[in-house]
Structures are given as C-alpha cells and as structure tokens.
Image 1 (cartoon, chains in turn purple, brown):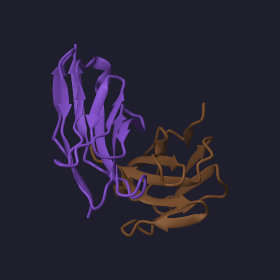
Image 2 (image 1 turned 90 degrees about the horizontal axis):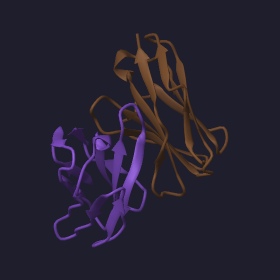
Image 3 (image 1 turned 90 degrees about the vertical axis):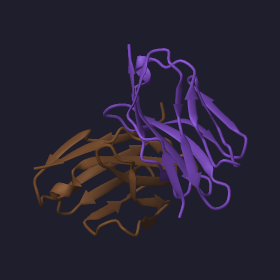
Length: 112
Length: 111
C-alpha cells in the first residue's frame, strides 16, 4: 500500500540555521504531496503542496519540490526561527485528496 | 473567517461513560473526516462522510460512531471509552476529495 517515510526526529537547530526534513513516499500512480505543520496543542495546518512532478510548493519561507525520480518531497527552509518549532508531517493522497497517508511526523525545536 | 471549529477543546470523561465530540465548519465543504491522534504519532483516519455517505475505515473499532445531521456539523460518539481511547481527536473537511482543512482538535482524557 501507499506509505510515507520521514526522517526521525527530534531535530534541534539554532535560530537562522538551514533546515531539511527528508520525506520519501511509495505510491501507485501519481500522488499529490503535502506538508502539514502542527504547533503544540493545535490541529494540523497545510504548509505547502505539490500536485505533479517537478512542482515546487512554497509558503512562509518553506519549500519542497516533488521529485518523481527519487520519490521524494523534502522540506527546506533557509533560516529557521524559534516560532517554527512544531511537528511537521509529510502526506500524500493517491488521487488528489483521497486516502490521505501521513508520515510519522518530525518534531523540530529551534533554539534562540 | 471560514473555519473548522471543534468543541470542546478539552474533554474529560470516565471509563465507560459515553462521550460526544462536536465539529462544525463554515467552509461549506461536502466531505468531513474524523482522525484520532495519539501522542507523537501521525493522525489516524477513523471515518469520513462524503456528503451523506458514511465511510468507515476497516480497522476503526465499533466503539466509535459518527453522525452528520447536516452539511455543517459532524459528531463523533464514543460509546464506551476505554483508557486506550485517550487521544487528540481531529476533525477535517474538504471540498470533494481535495486538500483537507483541520480544526484545532479536542483532547480527550479518560479517567
């Protein structure tokens, strides 16, 4: 079945450091890919998305590029802030929005 | 602002005492979902409504039921909560089967 793998956390960075959170997927067909962020005590918020190969999703300084050849959707940010501390979930849907599959999540802590 | 609202944000119940969690939306989305999220884990889909059609995930326990009286509201009923049902319960909505919009969640404690 479809699956999403993320790098294990927690990830701890200093403010202004470069962030990469790796995400790879297994799916039949051509899934849509998503990154969601969950701040402490809150629900999930869509951070960015990409619906086809080579698309780049971006939002709030975060970027991820849909790489079909490597089945990856790595999340990057050039300079993290303390306010970016949260859990980040990579997710896919085999047909757009259907049967969402979430990765296990990666907890990010940014220290001042 | 259009949004997904969950009430209450925190719910405490006793072992075996039925509890109902509420979700409402102002997005006019036709699909509504209920997820269970345990600590440090990914959300797990329990079921969803596509319009009035109920779709249960195969491994969702019978202890969990849902009602959707109209487009805007959806309820999660836990008939006999056990200690293992303590979790964050997330409601989400989507237009057709597009991207999902999540509510803030209800944290359920079972004593």
